[in-house]
Image (cartoon, rainbow, N blue to C red):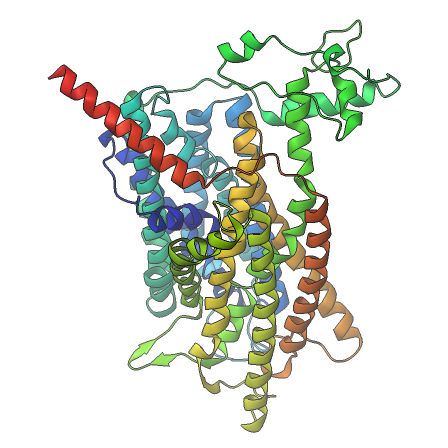
Length: 583
């Protein structure tokens, strides 16, 4: 879950750019982000445990409820970005989203605190004789969860962009400070996430859910007040229109003119003057023959309605976004694997010995190793692997973004194979100790699961980092935010696919009398399910290789961080010269 929010941060650390001077006015945004991430991951990381242990839901039901909710969380930012760009503006979208977010957190805290809103405690390890949550209890808890999901939809795409809006791209000093803001912002995300995955999860498991939910709720309320206190100092941007609208105009205009012939000479197509793009600080794109049907949108007719006639650049921007969709689809299955971290991986942890010395390890805390291993892997990749491989490839990145994604997909095959073998071993130990039917704790340490968590972080260092960079780099300049949202969309889709696969496999295997996923994992065959995932990843990478063979890069640019460092070096020199001249 913490994946998307920490990827950029680890990239910045690996490049040695984490701590630069920052504008004091942006402290409010950084503080808000720390507490917002702490609140969100304080709920999501341990959600599976609450659903199974406190609401007494079954394994399949709980896992699907988690993935359905997480999928919704990663889809709602698309709506949040639309309202910010086209309707309300970023500031008011964020303010409204904060109010919704806080109401969801408050209701969640109420749901775990009031005895009437939760089932009575149950000591039955199998959960067979436990009183199930009634409609009121389920209704209140899930209403709060999805209210929170709506709130995150308005905060995720806007908090960082509001921070970026505070800097003038054409002012050398402010442009230098802009990177500094993102460094502190990402560092705040890392702190909030790590605190949630360790301290808050431990409090929830060992002290109580009221305190475990109450702390992040209080912190979120304070951070919102701090954010609002700086309102008069912020630079507010008016809505400029959504890229979804521009893409829809191209597609609809093409369909409405499906009988119109496209002229052989691209110069006959409708396009704005070069001065128009220069005035708006945009880049004009020449017409290309790919996805030729869309060129109908810029064929001149009697109508100048934007839903009937679009300039060539707008059409080419739409093409670039559509060309990435097959690659986007190929990332759905790896995202489905990521969805297992906070569901079935956690469920496995509950069956093992969690004592480490005098400390009781919460199963959900193992997710912290995904973030830490990803951090270490990205640094090693940048400092060593990339420099070595450059000697053979002459590619500034070492390997292409799609090749890096492919390595990550191969690692997902390894991960699910390792998870399957680990589960097979756990089941054999349970059988040897007569724990199959009584669902007893398997006498092996929870650290037995550490390899699959660590390997997931290594895979993320290849696939997820490259995925974000690929969708950002290959998106047209005016649609970079939409390109970034592709990365969120794939995580949402992956969680929904996880729900579908778990329900389908459970239903089919139950009908055959050998159910793979039961409430009692000692009597289940989770090893078969993980092996099925390994095969699914093999099929997916074949599809990915075919799509990459057909894909044409928009541009193979040099290492973006190297370019940025050079640019910052120039800015620093310029700022120093200006200050010296002023003095």
